[in-house]
Image 1 (cartoon, rainbow, N blue to C red):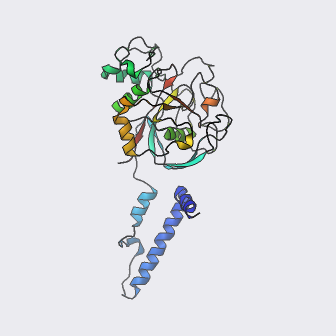
Image 2 (image 1 turned 45 degrees about the vertical axis):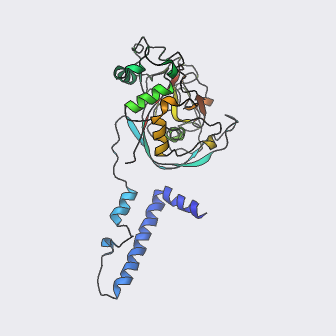
Image 3 (image 1 turned 180 degrees about the vertical axis):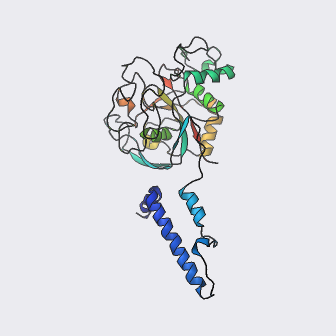
Length: 316
C-alpha cells in the first residue's frame, strides 16, 4: 500500500509538486526552530543544509533540463503505463494487462523510409541488395527494389523487405537503435489507458492503412498521429523490435538494462532467436493493429510488409 501511494505521488505531477512543497516548508520550519536560540535570522529559501536539496535542485527534478529533440523524433515521457492486451479474444496465449514503468526516450515520428534507407545503402555496401549475406536475409530482401534503387514515387513510403539484421545495422549506423517491445507499445498507446488502438476503441481506414484496402504501403504521415505525435505506429508496415519474443507478454522484461541493450547491439549478427514485431501492416486485419498485439519472426526474414523505426535513449 505504501509503495502504491509513493508511486501515485511520483506519477502525478500535481501530487508530486504538493508533496515537495510541503517537504520544503517542513524542513524550513525545523531549521528555523533549531536556529532560533542562536538569534540568527535565516531566509528559508536560502537554506542549503547537508542532505536537504535546495528549491533550485527540487525544481530541476520537477522541470528537467530541456532535452534536445531532433526534428524527426518525439519524446515519450517516463512513467507507469498499463501494458498488454485488454481483450483476450485477440490472443488467447497472452495474459491480462500489467503495469510497467519505463524511463523516457525518443522515438522516430515515422517508420524509416525508402529514401532514408537508400542513403544507408550507399554508405554500407555489405547491406546492398546483391551484397547482403544469405545468413542475414531469407531471399526476398528489398524485393520491390531495382538493385539499390527503390520503386518510383515511393521515396516517402516506409522501406519493407528488410530483415531484423538490416534494421539493426541501419539503426547502429544512424546512432540510434530499435525500440524494445514494451517501448514500442508505450509510444503506440499515446498516453491512453485500456484502449485497443492508438486513438481509442475505434479503427477506420481514415486512421490507418490496413485490411488490404489500399493494396500497398502509403507515404508516411498520410494518416493522423496519436497523442504523442507518432505517425503510422499501427498499419502500413510491421515494425521490428529489439528484443527476443516470449510467448507470454508478462514474461517479457519491461526494462532491459543499458548493458543488456548494448550486448544485443554488439552481438546482433550472431543472434538467431525470434524477434518481436508490432503494429500490423497494410495487409493486416484489425486484430493485428491492436497496440497490445505482438507478432514475431526469425531475424533473417525479409517479408513484403516488414519495416521498422528507431529510438534513442536520453540518459547521459
